[in-house]
Amino acid sequence: MKAVLWDEPFSDPDWIYERKLDGVRCLAHRDGGGAVRLFSRTDRSMDGDYPELVEALTGERCRDFVVDGELVAFDSRGVTSFQRLQRRGRERVAVFLCLFDVLRLDGHDVRDLPLRRRKGELRRALSFHGRVRYTPHRNERGEEMFREACRKGLEGIIAKRADSLYRATRSSDWRKLKCHAEQELVIGGYTAP
Image (tube, one colour):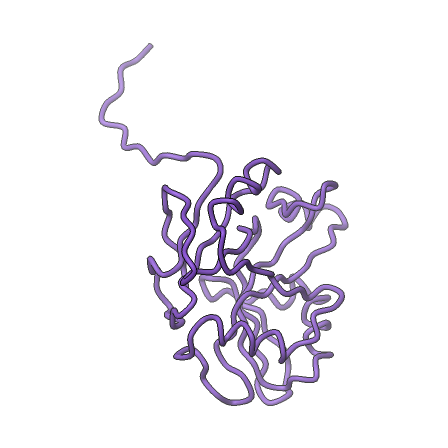
C-alpha cells in the first residue's frame, strides 16, 4: 500500500502512527521454505544487492510469507539516511529491513485482515533480530509523535487507519506527514537572464 501526502498532523484512536523511514520500499517473498526474494516497489529484483538480508530472512522459522517494509541504512545519529544507503555500492554500509506489514503468511492471503491484526501476525511470525527489524507504532497521539519527529530531525511520520485492508494502490488510509515542506511546481515560462 502506498501513502498519500497529508498536510495536517492529527490524533485519532482509529489510527496508528509510525516513524517515516528514509530508505527504499521492499517486499520480501518466501514460498514454502524456498529461496527468499526481495523486490522494489517497481517489482525490480533486489536479491543480489542485499544478500545479507536474504540470508537473515532465510533463517526465519516462518517458511512462507510476503512482508512489506523499508530497506534502510542509519547515520551516526541512528536516523535512517537515504544518502547513506545510496553509498552502498562505493563503501561498506550496513543495511537493515524494517518491516511494517504482512500480505501472506503460511499460505494464507492476509491482505483483507485489518492492519492492526496484520501487524500482530507479523510480530508473531518473525523473530526480528539482527538485520530484520519490526517497525514500532503508536496507537494514538499522532500530533505529539509528529512534533517529536520534526524536533529530532526525522523525515516525518506515517499515519495508518488501524482497520485498513492492504491494497496495492495509493490510499488515504495511509498518510505521510513530512516535517520539511515540499512543493511541486509547474514552470509556466522562462526568460533569459
